[in-house]
Every structure is written in C-alpha cells, then in structure tokens.
Image (cartoon, rainbow, N blue to C red; front, side, top):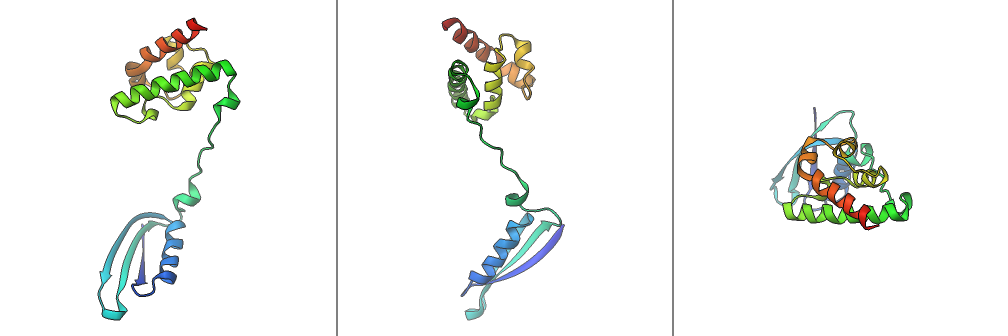
Length: 152
C-alpha cells in the first residue's frame, strides 16, 4: 500500500485537479482522504490517496465483457424461448426484489434453450447454476421450458 498527497487550489483547481484525476485513473485506489485547508486566498484541498503500487485503475485493468446479441446467436425458435425465459426471470426477480442476474444470467438462459433442458440434472449441468438456484428457481424454469415446448 502506498500514499500520494495532492494539493488542489481552491481558486484555480483545473491543473491540479487534472493531475489528480490522471493519477486516480491510472492506479488502483483504495481510499481518498480530503481536507479543506482555509488559508484565505491561498485555500486549497489537501488529498491523501491510498493506492496499491503496480496495479492499474479500473479503466485500464478491467476488461468489459462484450455484450452478446442472442438474436444473432440463437435460431428464431430458440430466441423466442429465450425471450420467454427472460420474461419469467424478470417477473420472479421483481416479485423477490432482487436483480435479474441473481436468478440466472443471459448466458445461462441461452444455454437452457440451446441444450433443450428438460430435467433437473440437465439444468444443474449448466455452468454457474448451483444448489441455491436449483432450490429456488429450477421448478419454475423447467415448468416454463416444458410449457413452451408443448405449445410449439
């Protein structure tokens, strides 16, 4: 853990602020402690930055996952099934007050339709679906998959 100190002029913060932002964007910041120093016309912000040496900030080191357009990757029939599962996921998530990804990810929903999942063991075989998701949501999603298949 390292420390770096900055002073940012209250009257003309642009240059100092720019240097501060560059530093923060290029390092993994753990904490920033700031204090205003009232010194009349020479007032300034004193900033103590705690960071980890050798690790870049989030803009540099974290790669965003590319969004997948499942309309392009699934057949028309599978995409329709996928949309129905997404609607079920949204309804259940809203009922429980949790984010949709807490139930299943888009990738897991796509796997359900491409693998034509019909059983608990087939559902559990999908990567990332653990016992908690099985206990809470397996019956609802298997029922939906079976209802979708029987209506086609």
